[in-house]
Amino acid sequence: MELDERKLKILKAIVRNYLETGEPVGSRTISKYTDLNLSSATIRNEMSDLEDMGYILQPHTSAGRIPSDKGYRTYVDDMMREKADEISQQQQEISDMKDFLTEKVEKVEELLQNTAKLLANNTNYATMISAPRFAKRIKFLQLSLVDDMSLLCVVVLDGNIIKNKLVKLSKQIDAETVLKLNILFNSTLNGLTMEEINLGIITKITGQAGEHMELVKRVLEIIAEVVGSDEDMKIYTSGTTNILKYPELSDNNRASELINVLEEKQQLTSLITENNSEENTGIQVYIGDETPVQNMKDCSVVTMTYEIEDGVQGTIGIIGPKRMDYEKVVESLKTVKGQLDVVFKNNNE
Image (cartoon, rainbow, N blue to C red; front, side):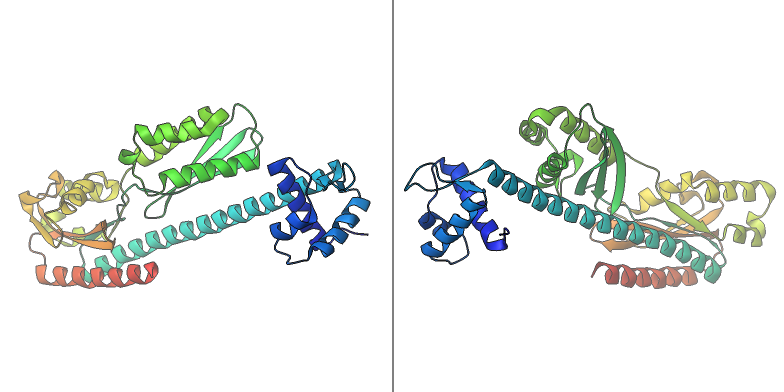
């Protein structure tokens, strides 16, 4: 006789009821406890089979049944298989999500690089475009076992920015504990910025961590590192050599300074920061000394803000001589901005 699905459900109901009450379990109780919709007589027959198979015991005549060691083992093994399936499914979902987000980020970078090249070709000036700046809000956190003494912490921020950090463990933990920690972190921190993770929230998390308090504190430190870090802004440039076409910018000193600014890119961040201020949300034109970049005082710079979604913005800029064709430049920026808006809107739908 084998343990079919119906017998297994009845056995699990007996074990769960006995664990809750500590009292022998009768057929009438099981008929109300399971979703089998079976009569008490049918359940009595199944319980008799389970007893013959050694899964349950009858402590004394006329009493209900209690699980045997074999019954407990079957119950626990089945429970662990279910948990393993849940963990495996969640890890696969996270893996699929990570692959999708990484692919999307790579496509955005390629799109911005191509946009800078297109503008440079169409205008015959130098161009720049910044990657969108995202609010550093926690979207998702995933802890995964790497080996017996290592844990990978993956933090996904708004804008699909993914940060990874390896955590060394002081003692081994099992997959079920990791799953519980994932649920704890995500149910508490989802949607928060670092500024919103206050002492009360930290106390709540550490209070629920139990014996894993030190590990939880380390993960919170990692979250603070990745969310609070201010990494270099990504800026893509193209058409740097176009500035050599204009005599007023092509002498050795001026050309060298401009090329250095466009290739090193660090000084361009001041243009991005100023353009993304609350007052400057549209087209900005900097002529000569108006530009915040010292080595661009002989140039004109025209910038425009593009937006992926509410509050997630980047900057497109065109750099040329003061005698640049402003009308053409502005129209080119408007056209590119419109194309980017369409692309990002389609990606977000």
